[in-house]
Amino acid sequence: MKSKDPRPEASALAEKVRSHVRDKAGRRGLPDVKALLGCGASAVPIQAWLAAVVVAADAKAPALAARAMKRAESACAKPAQRLELARFCCAIGRHDRVRAAARLLLRGKGVRLSHEAWLELSRVAGEAGDKASASAALERGLRAASGPDELRQAAMRYQNLKDYGRSLRLLDRLVERHPRNGVFFSDRGVLRWLMGDQAGALSDLAKARRLDPANLETAMSLGSALVAAGREAEALALYDSALAGQPDAASSGVGKLMAVERAKLAALRRAPASACGAPPLSPAAGRRCPRRAGPAPSRRAPRRGRPSPRRRRASPG
Image 1 (cartoon, helix red, strand yellow):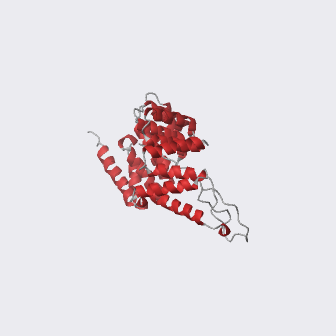
Image 2 (cartoon, rainbow, N blue to C red; image 1 turned 90 degrees about the vertical axis):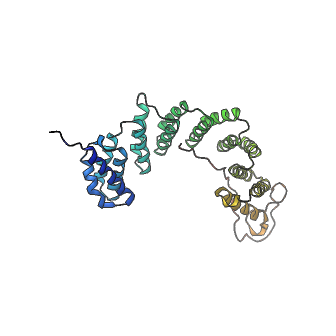
Image 3 (cartoon, rainbow, N blue to C red; image 1 turned 45 degrees about the vertical axis):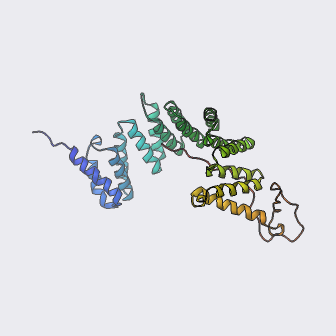
């Protein structure tokens, strides 16, 4: 007599456990987690094992969660499943598991992933503090890159890892190949600012603004750089121009931030010398007026720090 095929039962249990995550069942889902643990690891999809981890953790059952995690690791027969495990572990803060999964993928022979998948592995490895694996995954991703957008994503990932040299080499290549693309100049301008090259950053951001005047992120980055360089009058004019050119700009995320920064900058320029701790700004090229004699300031003006242009994140793809 043939034994009963356990797969239909395992499939039904897997779906019930996944529904417990959606319903936030808590301890009510533990009986199904225990029943699922009675099935073979290969008979259950990895998504169900990961759901079992969540249900057990929410129900304060760490032993069951640990068993479910081991089953999930045993069920990783394909590189894409190992990546899914690494992403999940990153989301729940199990960075040790992320590092282990990343190293297994990188050491495996014949492992093939898409460009986007390698970049995602680089992201989670970087968040787990494994810079070596993050860089190695990026190198693999570059081998699979086939277009400018993919090279840009890799450059942004190198920037996030603070590997500015490699990021700059990729952006130099993109600017050389696509001299009319303002986004690439803007990206390189932000990177040069982070590297301490103020003149190069301002040059790239200004060119990006000329090539793509409708890009609010570029205008915001250039304005921040101008303020940090002591050229507040130019920054104020830039914000006015960018907001006036797009009537609906103030309703967008970047537009709202630009409007706030513009208002702060205008208020600082209007502030009288006796009302703030720093001399006011004169209309001519944003220079400081001589300090007036008088009583001690009643309040401090906002400190002029060194705001940097907004960073961009790599899309995980």
